[in-house]
Amino acid sequence: MAGLLVLPLALLALVAGVVVAVLRRQSLVVPPEAHDEVARTHRRLVLLRLGALVAAAVTGVAVTSGAGGGLGGPGQVASAGPALAALVFLAGCCLAELTVRRAATRVRTASLAPRSVLEVLPRAHARTAAVALGAVAATLALGTALGDADDLGRAGRALATRCVDASGLEVSHLRGPWPGSFYALPVAAALTLAALLAAVTLVVVARRPVVSQDRALDAAMRRWSARDVLLGLTLASCVTLVPVLLLMTAGLAGASCRPTGYGALALLCGALALAACFGTAWAASSLLVRPALVAMPTTQPREVAGR
Image (cartoon, rainbow, N blue to C red; front, side, top):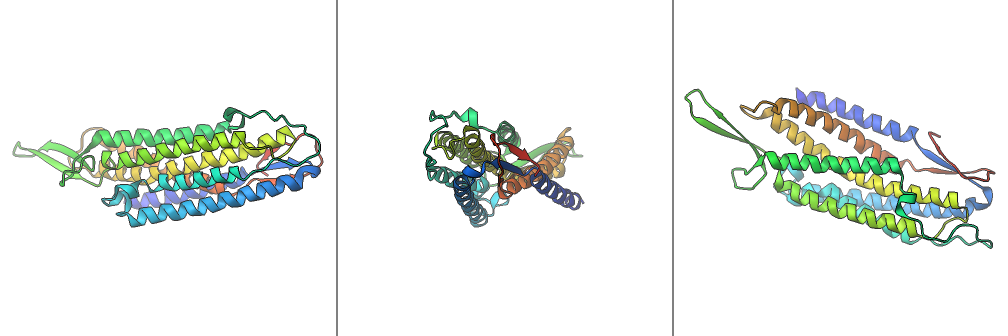
């Protein structure tokens, strides 16, 4: 019964995430004299990042399906599939930024001083990525704290409960698989590497050559690149959270003689799994729904949401 309720709600969350991403699509008004050169750079970056996204998706599917069936099987590497896919995507983003060449103009008007990461960082996307990574860390910590060894002695792969039966004997029950330390360690290691690579890529974005002598236009282009880096981290975190939280929901709700509080914790994990579904759809859609360049006569480029 619970599965029948989760599926339509998850689909609703996915649809909502897609709708939000489409409605919040951004466009940038560019002066006509700068449009062609900026458009070429933008098009090249978009194609390279989409290629990186495809490579990441293939990597994630291959690792998850070919290394023990993910969290439901014994494979620890498969449980880190989304984070490994994020590493591929972020590496592609970093390489794409290294292809940017300085704008060729007769008169230089933009400052040539290196920009800082904070200057080009989209605050909302940075907060979202931080929340998603924090949610993964908290979930893995909870799973590790509640996890026990399974019947083969693998630490953190089962949820153990103990109760007293009618004859007064203490009985132990094991329920698995459980996302404890057995899976948390490889996931945490891979996501940590992804976060470090994202930080390196953001530095590359901040220090790359200018694509336009208009400082505001150049800053907007850098923010778009930084946005995709942060969306990659958010997507990897949300894709990791969905199966982990669903396993925790099933384990807590189905545990024999479960302690007080397990029922409420199961409901919380289920609700967070739906939120992670929404985050997955929103991040993936935002990566696919590309910002647009609009050539119009204006002296100050500006970003427009919801075009």
